[in-house]
Image (cartoon, rainbow, N blue to C red):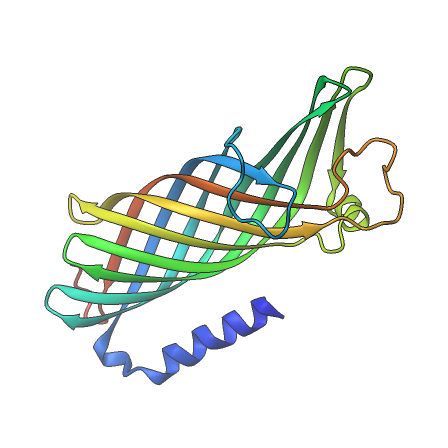
Length: 228
């Protein structure tokens, strides 16, 4: 449902503009950051950052000039993302860890406000895991398990991962940019169906906050085939 609303809003915004006054915007973004997982669905900030996330996306949308040095873009994002949820516990005074690695297809919407060489961005969408790996390491048990999307649907109430992202980018060499971003994955909740209950330690929820760097390029193309 969120995805449908996002796409409908995107096309409505395109139709509502005078197409002679806007530019086609194309982009590619690559990201790499540190990740902190949380099992408390009421908290956003994790207690520590224990792993790394990475991903990339292709963007297509529209760019509208406001002044000669100011514009905004509305974009559709399609890409891939690798999420890592790493959790540490103390059980009977001994260290135990759980680690989830999600390989996901990403679809979302993104808005960018451009002020000269500076751009502020915000957006969100969903990540659709195609597969995942779970690793458990305790004083009495070690295991590594691989899950398909169907397995994840059995483990979680929903296998889809909603997210929001914010960024600050700096343009370099015309189309290229480098910046920083923060990504928050909303909680996904475990089903209480005893699926792998003899293995999982955390059986409440998973969420994560990522902070990192991103780089890539954006090209704005007007309908007269002129680039800038």
